Length: 148
Image 1 (spheres, rainbow, N blue to C red):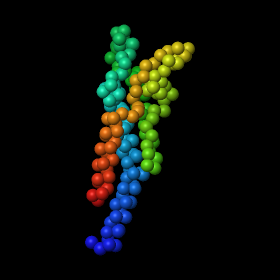
Image 2 (image 1 turned 60 degrees about the vertical axis):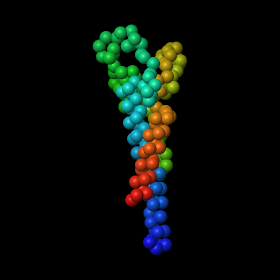
Image 3 (image 1 turned 180 degrees about the vertical axis):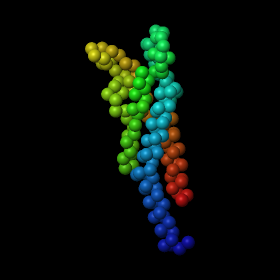
Image 4 (image 1 turned 90 degrees about the vertical axis):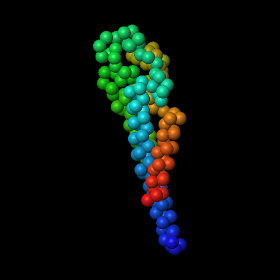
């Protein structure tokens, strides 16, 4: 391979990696994180750390309320509200519902009279499991870009 050919090859690799980092990876990592966070809703935990049980089930609520998973409510809107916004080289994962932070972080100031305590039931945030999955995905995607 001549120097010019090699230089052109390196420029192609550089462009592929730049495209991965700035455009493709934020979308792929956003999808990965959202999928993992939504799986947590089905498991009623945050990566294996169980959420505190809800009163309605502890008190033996009848019908659907007694069987419904934690944080799903009658509509399931909270779990479905998890979304991502890709930007150049980054991604933001969030829920746009006004009560999502109260559940994700916990609060002692909820309800109409502001005296309702909501325990923290984290469903979005950093975790070693998410970090490992992200690192694996980045490695896979960069390897694909290098092997093209």
